[in-house]
Image (cartoon, rainbow, N blue to C red):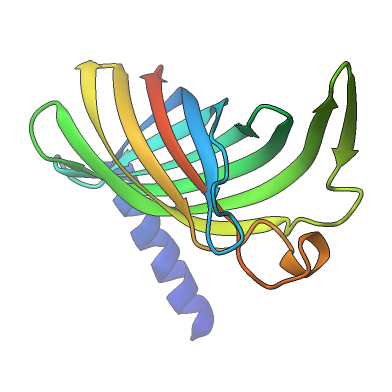
Length: 196
């Protein structure tokens, strides 16, 4: 009986996807990121970028599901210290077409931290600390993305997103001796070119 349900579910899924329009594209963005939370008072902002691939599965003319896989460089920098982090991000967004070319998007984002380092400058000298070696970071984060965009052409979208981390990327006890969270926060301006 279980096999029958599995076969039926697979047939329904395949039927639904056969009617859905699927587009594939490349995504690139510049981001402006910082940290927020009890352990991130006065954290500096910094400029970075993200690039990856996206799919757009149209459920109906008004709603699409848009998953992405991006490599993201985040930076926070002040006069003497620059913190750089590379992450693999997977946002899964619901896209609602509010007008013929205007859309709103919202959804969860999964993040996997790949590497992170802090560079400190002391006059003419600088030191670099690999935070991955020090095991100060949590390697998984969960957040939410909210944004809006505009279809400039049938194959080109531009969008603005606000990404808010909901889990701490810093292991507080190892890094600052406390459980206070430090979470990622980003403003992102990007574009997606749909080539399929």
